[in-house]
Structures are given as structure tokens and as C-alpha cells.
Length: 356
Image (cartoon, rainbow, N blue to C red):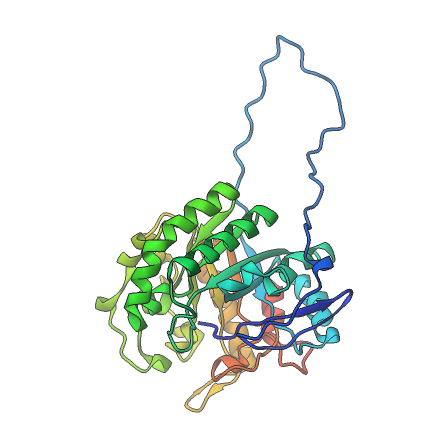
């Protein structure tokens, strides 16, 4: 549901950036190269097994769960502001994410490369989710003609080959896309299998997914959505339209419920009635102030955070992303959904988030 895309520019150590969806400043090429780290499993020699010993079966990797993260969301986009964000955000977060125009994957001087390259200096994992639709207007960013699809495909494969990311998302809140621009939905549905297959071939261990909006998936269209809540309008059947390694959702119950205590106890566990995939939340939020007639407080934001972790305990999400670390210059009620105002250093929400 987050409508803000954050482009950035990095200059050696000091990094400057500003918010703009379509105008991407350049990032010097010398900081956009391979950032792979040495493997912890590099062999240094040792005793060999004797011939009569039975080799041990390799252990099946266990998917790490319970990770937390925030999107790239600095207080300001000066060099000082960017460094402040990377100094502070990883203290209470495992992941830093970027969501943006898919075309940026084809330009190493753009934000997704910054988010991955900054891992060399700060302790976090990175994730990118690409969009082909303007989430605010529902309009397609560029026609999905053969040239565009090849550009999207090539850039996704190149990025996956370079970084071998843990996670990689394609398409944001697809059930809303289907509602606002059905032609664009079905065009992407036809194209997506090529992307999934190509990315998995380039990086077999990458978990590939597309993203859904949970409230709308449930048929909840009341509150600040402006409609009515009607479970008969649930959209769970759409999950089968895309092959995904994760069941990924954005989560904004504050748009439907006026108080965290009103959220039903099965609000999140209901997802497991419709999918066996590991569950992730790529965006989540509750505003600190809200809007007239739908007010909130920092304490209410903190109450929601605590309630979320209670309600999600039994489904054990792989990761949960809070939309903004600092408030961003976007429209109400998302404008106060950050864990911090740009002039704050602590809030009840940040304290609650950091405690889990």
C-alpha cells in the first residue's frame, strides 16, 4: 500500500538522495560492483574420512524465520540523512527493503544497487520488490510490449545472478491491480512465469514471489477504503494465479479498524486456510496520528505492534517489514506511519518494534 518510491545517490562515503519516482540521479559505478562476501564454508584442509566411514547426509537448510525490516526511509536525503538511516535502522532490523520501478534493476546507478552494496558497511540483509504499475494511479509505467518485457527479464536475471538474493519480489498488491487495471493484471499474469523461471535458473536458492494486499484479499473494503466490509468479496482464489515461493502480503488493518483491539484473533491465521506457503509481510503499518475522525497516537501504534506479534506467533512469518522508519512525504494517513517523525529519536512505536 506504500505509494512512495525512494531513489538515492551515493558519493563515495557521503551519500545524497531525494524522493522522486521517475527522476533517478546517478550513483558512481565504483560503488555498484560485486559485493559478495567470502563463504564461511571455505575449506582450509583437514582430516580425510577413512574409506570405511559412511559419509554424513547433508543437512536440509532450515528457512530462517522471524526477521524484521524497514524500507529505505531516511529522515532526509542529504548525505548526513542517509548515513543516519543506515546507522540507526539496522540496530533493530534484519532487512532493508526497496520497492520501485522495475526499470531501475537495469541501471546499476540506482537505489536497488545502493541498498545491496551498503551491506558491505552495515549489518543487514537486503531485498528488492519491483513494480510495473504506479500504485497510486493504477496506471502501467510502460506498455508491457516485447521490448519492455525483455528489458524487465534481462534486468531481473542480471540482478539475481550478481547478488544471489535471498528474496526477490515482482509485482505489488496484485489484487488491487486486478481491480483497478484488469488488463495490466492479465498481461503480467502471462509474463510472470518467464520471470520466475529465469530468476530461479540464475539463482536457484532465491525465494521469488509476488505481493497481495491482505485487507482487500479478505474482502475488507470499509473504513478508510471507503466501501463496505464483505467477506463474500474475498479474493483468495487469486493466490493460484502466480507461482510463488512465499505467500506475500501488505498489511494495513488501520485502514479498516479504528483500534488494534478490534482486529480479530484469527486475522492472520486465516491465511493458512488458503495457502501452505511460508508467509511474509512486505509492508505493514499503523499511523501515529491518523486523520480527522480516524485518529491515532504513538501509544496506539505501539499497541498494534505488540498485537501483531501476538497474532502472528502461530504462523511464524519468515519476515515482517514496517513501511517507514522515518515519516515520509506522502499523503495521509501514510504520512505519519513511520516509527519516528523526522525530528524524533524515540517513540513508543519504535520501542515496541525494537522489543520483538
